[in-house]
Length: 331
Image (tube, rainbow, N blue to C red):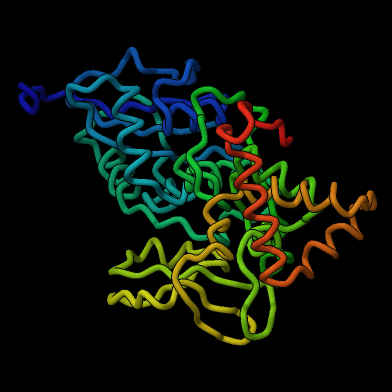
C-alpha cells in the first residue's frame, strides 16, 4: 500500500530533446520517447521532470501513483501548466539545495526542493519573450496545443518538432506592443507569410472586422463570464473581457476609438474562420490582377464592409464542395 514504504525517493526524469518532451506532455500519444529515468520510479516516489532547454527548466512535479509515468506527466503538464522555472531558480528557492536523483524523500533537501517545485508561478507573457529555447518552450507549453491566433487545435502528435510554428518575439517589440509570442497553426503561418505580416498582432487584427465607426482594423473580441486569473494574465491584445453578464449586442470593441458593436454577422464571421478569410483574399487578388504583394495588401486592407462581405460570401461559395463537385485548392 502506498505510504507504508519508508525509503521513497525523489526521482528526476529528464525530457530530451525538449520539443519532443513538450509534444509528449501535451499529446501523450505522440510517437516520441523523450523521457529518461522512468525505470527507477516506483509508486510513492516524488518525481520532478526537467527538460533540456538552455538553461534546463522544471516541467512539473508529482507523487507517482498507479498511472504510467508518461500519462502522469501529460496529466500534470496539460492541466497544471506553469512558467517553466529554471532549475537554478528552483535550487535557489529551495535554499541552495542541489537537485539530485535518488534523494531520500524524508531528507531536508528533498523536502525543500519539493516545496519550491510545488510553489509554481503562473506563466506570464513577458516570460515568453526572446529567442532562447526557454522562451520557445514556454510558448509551446502555454499554448496547450492550440494556435495562439485562431485557437484551432494543432495536431502535435503528428507534427515534426522542427516544423512547429513557434513565433519568437524580441523584448523591445513586445514591450512596445508591436508583437506577441505564440504557437501558430499551418494556416496562420501561411496567412502571415502570404500577407507579409511580421507581427502576430497585426495578423490577428487583420482577421477581424473593421470598426463601423472609425474603420480601424483594431477590433478586439469580447469574452464574457467569470474569467480566471490565468486568462487575464495571458490575454492577447486582440481580446478583452466584457464582464460576467453577456451583452448580446456587443461582440467587438475597437481598440482605437472604443466603439462596441454587434453580434456575429457576415462581416465578422471570418474572425473564427481564418481559412475562409484567406480564400477570400486570394479571390480578390485574382480579380484585381495585382501581383505586387504590398500593393495588394494595401488594397485588401482598405476594403469597406460591403466589399469585404462580398468577397467573404464568394469565398464561402467557392469553398463549398456542393457547388461544383470538388473543393478548390486554395493554397
